Image 1 (cartoon, rainbow, N blue to C red):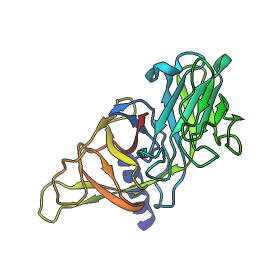
Image 2: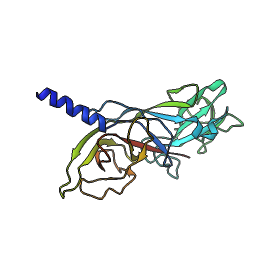
Image 3: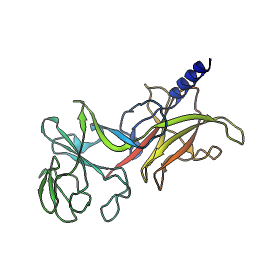
Image 4: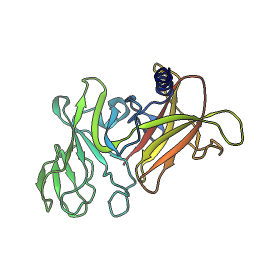
Length: 255
């Protein structure tokens, strides 16, 4: 009997919790969800960013380029956090390149690719890189690091980002002051990465932002969250229905 109860609890949690590397751009959803099994909180693993080409005009044509920030960029062109911006370049015949923008000279952030020259410039000391990240000239010691990228031949790009992935555990909690039960989402937040909570009534419905509280009894009036340090955190959301999917989304910006 105990085994059956544990199984039913596991099924309930999986009905309500949804671990994901879902991302949003400037508040507008531009990716599909990436589901994973609910599991114990762990150190960050590889995460998948899913980009819809239709959301990025620059990537509609050959020689297009975008630069996406996961952490804020400081005035000295260094990220305020562990992630350098990701550069996506489009080459001929539907080839795509995903690159870490960290220059191999003195770690400044490299510019997106110039569509006329198919080259990327590091403004700090003038190093130049090709569409695929190879070093062309300058003080850089080598090529830019590459990320694994896949194109579905239609509208979807998938980029594998080491250390960006995370897992979520979910549980029901009863506020000490009474009221309706809340759903608690536990996950490992990375330093100065911005997150939001999304709710999806079913897999065929669009996800929408869900307000939350950082405490079980506080007002659920926050829409975004960022941690000053990498830490395990808990966010509390109001139960919207008897079933559905809650997601923790990473927010990125084009810079």
